[in-house]
Image 1 (tube, rainbow, N blue to C red):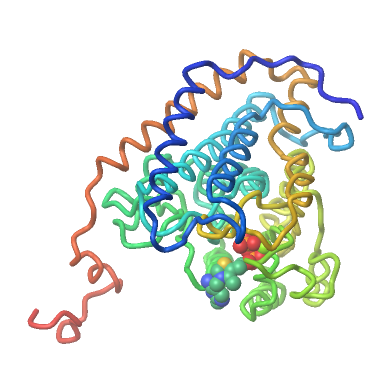
Image 2 (image 1 turned 120 degrees about the vertical axis):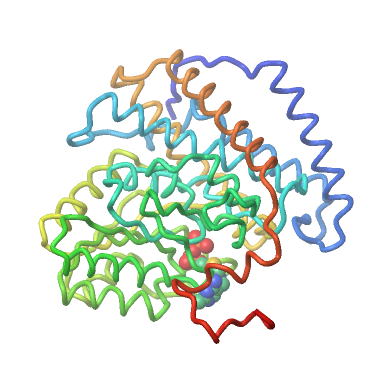
Amino acid sequence: MAEKKTPRKKKSATAGAEAVTEAAAESQESAGRTTGEGAAPTGAPKEDFQALQRRREDTALDVSRSFPDKYRLSGEMEGCSDARKLELLERLVRTREFDARMRRLFRQGRFEGTFYSQIGQEACDVVIAYQMKKTDFIGPSHRDLGASVGKGVPLTALAAQVYNRVDSPDGGRYTACHYWHPDYWVMQPSTSIMMNWIAATGAAFGFKMLKKDNVAAAFGGDGATAHGDFHEGCNFAAVHRLPIVYVIQNNLWAESLPLSLTTALRDLSHRADAYGFPGVNLDGNDVVAVWNATRMALDRARRGDGPTLIEMKTYRWFGHSDIDPADYRSEDEVEEWMERDPLPRYVAWLEESEVLDEEALDAIRTRVRREVEQAVEFAEASARPEPDAFLSKVFAHEYPGFDVRAGR
Ligand SMILES: Cc1ncc(C[n+]2csc(CCOP(=O)(O)OP(=O)(O)O)c2C)c(N)n1
Ligand SMILES: [Mg+2]
């Protein structure tokens, strides 16, 4: 098995020291937990679990590491300039660095709730979102950080969302990882799975009624394709030939439910056959393939030819959320998918195409890490919402006499 040749620099001593400090903070935090959240798999010592998390995160951050030759990318990204290929890489790196940083901050107890990691799946979101116009509509779900980052939403807003602070686009009202931004036409995911699918379908219907050339994209997981809204949305979009691209990230698991208990289908793209529009499936960790397929589907939608369903085969490296030790899957399965990491594969392809060199990659990493730290500082300095905030902006209009707040 041939490995990538380019030798890489080791991590700096400072980075190592930071990791030790962070590890101490995490252990302290986890020792203080009473809920059992983030605990080790049954029977395994807690420290092992924490160490495993950190090892995987370190691996994820090493985007220039080697991988098996069989996962090498080939082909060309249609209609993508070299400058855009690099900008796309930067958004992929930004998504990953932000995610890994937030995971660690969660283990340190710096924000409440939980965290839904997208590490391993970034290409499925970032590549399509990056190609969309600002006024195209995105309906993301709970694992779609890359949809916002891909579309250009600033990390400050996303960090404030994770921290539930007033500077979040939702004013701190909603649970972590429900990323969005109205100015970027990314709607906030609902906790109820597939509501975003229906809402994006509605947005596409609106674009068509208003004779706009905007398109919509909706994201869902493998498990979500069993939900009624998936089928209703697809059927409606097909009947009305709506300008929408449906993306299914098939990561083989819906929480602890394996795909084999969701459906007997091997390829979820076949679900599109039932509605009469194209369904394609591909390696969702292959940036080049994802680029070409989503580009075609977006063009088709914009031309008025109707929806496409794209099933992207991918994998989440961590638990369903960070209170899930994911001990229902084998280490071998995880390790195998880690070798198919979309980022090193894209980095290697860019290097082989002579679009990227080590210096340019280092510059991207440095820039992104600075941005992530600034976003964390911003979120931590932002105030928590007042209790009253939860009762405001619930409805688009005020209805005098129907105010739920007693005495107002
Ligand atoms: C209608 C509804 N049912 C159940 C849930 C609880 N829930 C949240 S995410 C999830 C699993 C989704 O799995 P999948 O669609 O494969 O997405 P993934 O988490 O793998 O990205 C479940 C069952 C919910 N939020 N909404
Ligand atoms: Mg899934």
